[in-house]
Length: 120
Image 1 (cartoon, rainbow, N blue to C red):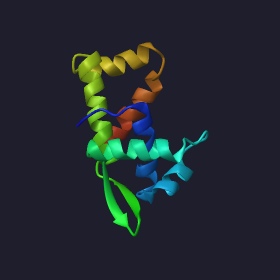
Image 2: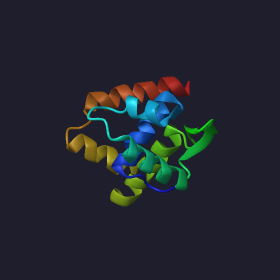
Image 3: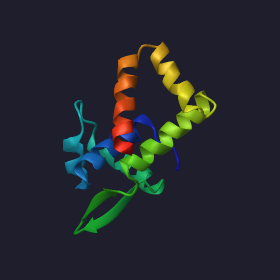
Image 4: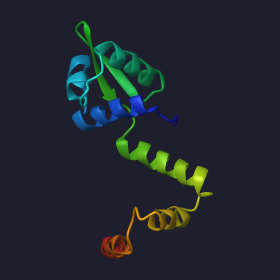
């Protein structure tokens, strides 16, 4: 699975949230400042070529659907990040977050409790 640019990710986030939409529905769902519809149309064309978006003709318009789930993309992106920067070690990645004060020890304890609960 290819990586997305920031602009491509932003449009995918909107598509994952709304499920599907025509060009103007996607533009309307974008955060402020909203990009021009031509910009969104160009990025949707790229996303279609990258196989992240499926297009269905609706009359003279096109309806866009995500063809990759947010979960699948998140998994791939996070796994790639850990592989690239932490030699594939999720333990090192979590340790880094704790050292940089992005994740507290109490957060880790809470997470561990949740995981134990989910396992039983």
